[in-house]
Amino acid sequence: MIKRIPRNVWVLSITSFLTDVSSEMLFNLLPLFLVNVLGVRTSVVGLIEGLAETTASLVKFASGALSDYLDNRKHLAVIGYGLSALAKPLLFFANSWFWVLGVRFTDRVGKGIRTAPRDALLAASAPEDRRGLAFGLHRAADTAGAFTGLLIAAIIVWASQAASNQLSKNTFQTVTLVSIIPALLGVLILALGAREIKSVKEGRSARRFQFTGLDRRFWAFLLVVVIFTLGNSADAFIILRAQERGLTVLQILGMLLTFNAVYTLVASPAGALSDRIGRRTILISGWLVYGLIYLGFALSSTGAQIWLFYGIYGLYYALAEGASKAFVADLVPQAQRGTAYGYFNAGIGLAALPASLIAGILWQGLGSWAGLGPAAPFYFGAALAVLSVILFVIWVR
Image (cartoon, rainbow, N blue to C red; front, top):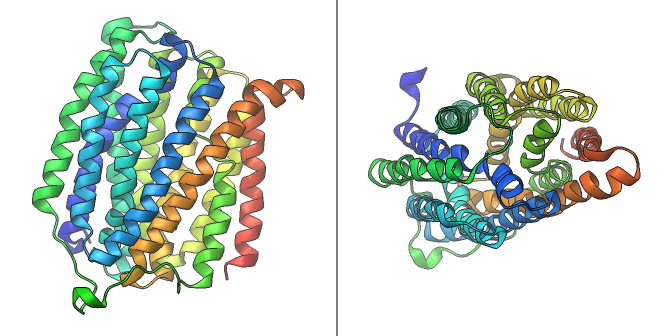
C-alpha cells in the first residue's frame, strides 16, 4: 500500500513534518512564555491566539479561491510556508505581548496562504479510494514532526532549567534559534519536490472566481464544524490547565509528547479506515471522544490526570482531522476544492477567535463567578461537542 502513495503526498507530508518540528517546539511554549516571562493574563493569551487564527482564516478563504482561479496550488503553498519560516525567528527578540502578537499574526498569514492550496493539491494527488489514507498519512507526518519538535524542546528545557515550574526567557530564546533550521528545510523540499496538478482544462480566460455552486451538504457540514469549533478553544488553555494542576514545564512537554505519539500512530490507520467504513462514522466517533476528554479536563484534580486525558486527546485528532478534510473533498468537485477548503479552514479559524475569548473569560471571569474556575471552558467544549454530533446526524445526510 505504501508504494501506491503518490509522490506529492510524500513531499507534502515531509514538508509538514519539518514545519511542525519547528512550530511545535516553539508555539507550545508560547503560552508559558507569555504567562511566566511576560506576565500576561490568560484573557490576553486567548486574545492573541484568537486574533492569530482569525487572521489566518480570512487569508485561507482568499488563498483557496485564488488557487482555483490560477489553477495553481504549489506556488501559493511555498509562499505560505516561506512566510511562516521567516516570522518565527523574530520571537527571539520579543519583550511584550504586542511583539508576540505581531509574530503570530505574520505566521498565521503564512498558514492562511498555504493551507487551502495545500489541501486541494493533496486531494488532487490521491485517488478517491485512497484519499482518507493520504490525508491520514499527511496528518501522521505532521504530528510526528510535532513529536520530534517537542522532544527537542524537552531536551533543551531539561538541559537549561531541569525541573523548574516556570519557563525562563533564555530557554525560550534557545528553542527559537533551533526552530529556524527545520522550517527552512521544509520550504526547500516543497519548492523542489512537489508537482503541480492542473484541474482546469480550458484557458485562463475561462477561469473565474467561484464563490457559489457548492453542494448544500458542504454548507451544512461547515456550519456544524463551526459550532463544534466554538467549544474547541486554543490548546494553550490545556497547557495552562496542566500547569495549574501542578505539572512542571518539562512534564508538560512530556504530556505533549504523549499526545503526539498517539496522534502519529493512529492517524494513518484512522484515515484508511474512513475509506472503508465512511467518513461520517469516523467523524461522529471523534467528536464524541472529544466531548469525553474535555469533560475529563474539567473534572481532573491532578496534573497526572490532565496528562492522561491529553494523551487520549490524540485519538480525537487522529479520528477527526484527516477525515474532515477528506469529507470536504468527497462533497466538492476538484475544480472548486481550493475555494471549498478556503471556506472550510476560514470557518474554523473565524470561530477560533470567539472560542478562545470565551475560554479566557470563562477561565477567569464567569467560571469563577459560577464556582467552576478553570474547569468552565472545558465543560463548555464538551457540551458543544455533543450538540455538534446531534446536528451532524440530522443535517448532513
